[in-house]
Image (cartoon, helix red, strand yellow):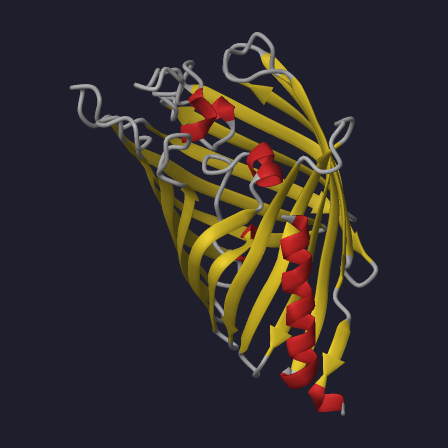
Length: 353
């Protein structure tokens, strides 16, 4: 795989040197530490994720708004005996104008502009799944945005379930400090090619409204709802609708912050422990949210205290956070540390010839 990727990169460089308008190298190096102490909660295991990720890409811009990107996403778990623990292809077409953009192929998840809370994607999911495989279309205006994403992350085969997700998000600002929007996910969790009739539908809607303002500290206060509709087609129960309300508060200055996220309502992961026809629990294969959203005690509170700041013209970003998670009965702890650095030099530019 590594040899084939090297050949593809060499071919792209050779082609670009002949005809490209502009060729850029875009490299992102990031280190992630995520330690969870969840034993006894029934909502997750105590574990430590400590890994380094490198995403080197070549960006061939053949006109003002059009480009083709080719590269790789390389992951190494600290302490592993392997040279690399995971290697994935990055390859996509991108259109980007002042207000409109689109990606098609395999591209970084940070291309998305929608707001997706941890009820959609957990911290660990972002570490191990930084890529979208599919398409994304977006509009970003002065006071509003909208996007549509199709992410196909499971190939229909004897080994893997067919899985895909459709994301829709939009929102805007009003009255100088106010904002509102909504995010929607429709996940299709199908069966393996050797198994029939074991499909799960998982829908989640998150409408929200909030304010951002400065009063010595920077404040972000948001109120929203999490409304789910889920169905396991192997049972006769039909659709179920776990839902709840969510209140978010953040106060920050000089990079130091404290935030609190309170969810009150039904557990959003009712099929987490369900055993499929393949003999495996749905678990994290179906649910990508923070596991505490599955609480059976009608309440979940997350409090984070930390530091987050960018340096060197925003090319270096540092974040450290101590998190207290409460499932309505007991308190559990999580520690997060992340350091990332990016570099994007222009390797070749026809404009400068």
